Length: 307
Image (cartoon, rainbow, N blue to C red; front, side, top):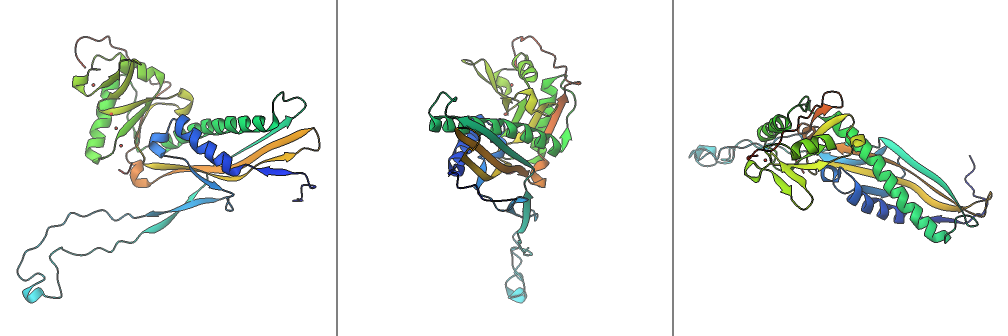
């Protein structure tokens, strides 16, 4: 395949698009709390591997300081120590692959666009960044569901499901805020639940009539199309990474019309360590979710990076 462009002028927009993608992702991505800021690489050369991470599976041991007079001293001089056996810490490299690709190809004819050409390019790049963020939302939601350690069953009673999740996170000793991504149906069921009071560990934004926490778990209302068939996805904050590698974003003068072709292509993916996947849970499906709404009486009730 020929690589020349017949001397047609080309303008490269990779750096601008990286900035747009990271900004839009930070504001509009549903799963930013779990995956953090979007990691973006410019002009990637490797289309298979995104990056390598350092990993270590040696657990932190809690030892006992030995004060025996013959440990490190006396007969134990030079051949023992009071801190106990020493473990060597070695970090291994884990290659993280891209898992999906993206592209766009648009034509802007200066005779029909009805706008300044440069303004049109800037506007379309912004809209493409928003479109790619929606693509990420779907991919990240599906990835969380696939990575879940367990499903907590149907959401017939939101309180029981959140109670079960809270117990699991307590036993796992998760030390960062835990979040529940929920569909609008589950969100409304929580709002209407009789246990939604500050005395039960809930937090409600009165101005927005929105639930902030339930059972001390942060609530994020999420469009159904990003939930991969689940009603609730439980995940601690900042336990994964989302990334994209940009091959090219450019405009090239068209031979077929009086304007430019706006084109872009790249790879993307996400990663959560096996250890942190043990703290991801799901609940409910479109067929099992029958969230019963309970009218309030007088009583009622979230938050976390590395697990």
